[in-house]
Image (cartoon, rainbow, N blue to C red; front, side):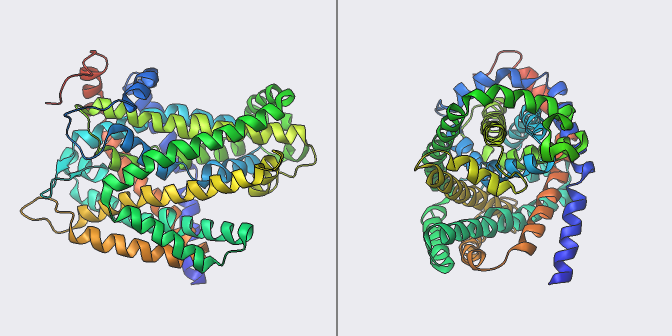
Length: 458
């Protein structure tokens, strides 16, 4: 096991090194230019996300698809992950994380567009889509589509399942003294009550849970920023200055470099919003939308909420707290986050605990759909059509069982395998995005820039 763990740790470090960061960020910038800066239509995307596209084909509402995608992306990385980036890369990492979110909106837009463009209707009436269908139907690369689906199915048991269950169990044990096995059993019961109902049940729960948990966390951040109000503007200045001159941060950050700030900030932003990974378009394909561009705009808002807002608020809270309370240690990202939130009298620590618990649980729900969809794609088809029946039932049961074991075992090796699978997912997806960028540009010109958003897809 030690040898296997060392192998995947080495593989994960290699896959998430500078080549992957450059490839992802390069794709973000390329698509921003190729699609003529779709970020300009952010407000349109927000408006469409809360509207029902009546009569449109799909399984869930556009907001339901967005909420499910956000459920999978808004996780513990938004809290502890940003703190780790600050601890390792200095305050400047926050700016690089934020810029990654800005450019990443174009990639998330293109993913959503291609997902709807190449989606299919299964023999059971359900809608299926995602990068595997874009690779097969758009590029004729079924072998690469099979690889993507395989990596997605494996990744779902890691970052989306066992890792999240373990985080919940350990936190509940440390905070409330509940045995991890009991927490694991409760997580299994709660998850089963949702995912056994299929995509509509998942979307329904996420539609309620995601806005509630995100709003509560944002309010907590705003309260801390009000308490740190004299230090907010200095924190913004420090973030900008240290992004290009880390020594400006002083103290223990003197050893940081521009490359370290950029690496940890960009990597955290990419990992947080999952733009380019290929996960979010799987649920985007199930949205009730009259044309691909409408859902593409809605999908792009997910990166805005996840990284441009939530990660940025977290970063600002952390940096302003470091300035306000010089005695805070920032060597440990998790400890830094706890200290910052503990400054809110009485409810600070419980608020952080609730945020981590709900963020982790929502990730479990979102990734269960991603993994199930990947398994459906890999199933033997009935007369060429996806059935999504036997494989779905088996996957859901296996996923629930994995949750329990994730709650009670050591997950070092699971973390490394999950990180590797997530990176391997991104490679086929980025190939599809780059090779089909002409299609995405044509659809964008046709519906968005020609002001024909209300037209039905041909």
